[in-house]
Length: 284
Image 1 (cartoon, helix red, strand yellow):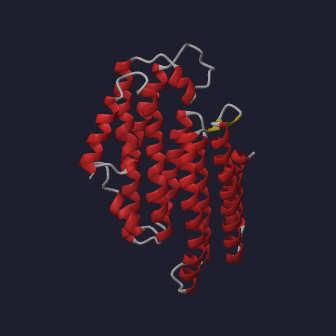
Image 2: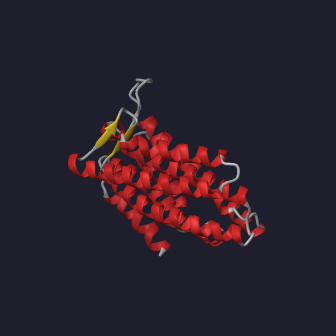
Image 3: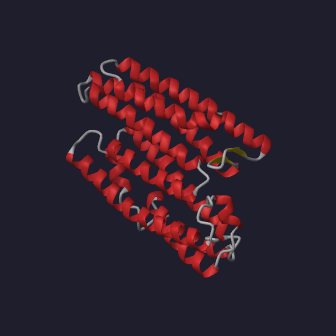
């Protein structure tokens, strides 16, 4: 039930924010109530994982120690970001920098961003993980261009174009992984667990992992795919900048780690470790 709350609450909050016509107080109340419920549900989920090792709901949603840790970090950042956003937007409206409609748009996009982040973390499908991470680009791009200034619009377009190219490479790598694990059962649901248990060709998964590392690494901000970062952080509202740093980048890195745990069972773990050291050293 707690897993479903992480998906249902931001969905309902986004709908309520869109339907609100006049009251900024209502927008603030929805945001605070939503983040409190999400935080409680998330901590309950992580606690259950710490007790039982894994928490699954049906075939499509699951939490283990890896995504549980990322969920915990996301919850903490989200909680303080939402609370800061209330005062931040109240000041922006009071100074006539933005109007009520822009505030409503901000809260709706914030809830949608939270929804797709949790979807990326909770789904057991590598393909759905990619779709959710792609959706984070769309919601965060509108938040980056929130003030509609030329420099903000330029930063948003740079963010979209560079990340779109990167995520296309990640999609190609994901498809190669899924094709390599294909067993002839077209109706089978390929999850992270089934992918790890499949018999994979080492040469194919090496190529696929390079695509995934470069693709998702674009969103992580590794050199030389990092050029969107300075503009996006400097032009986005302050709360959004914190989400880009402490949530968005982590989600992409989480996807890379999922694939790393799979490839390390197929080839020598030094292959992925050397790639991490290369990108990490150059980025530093």
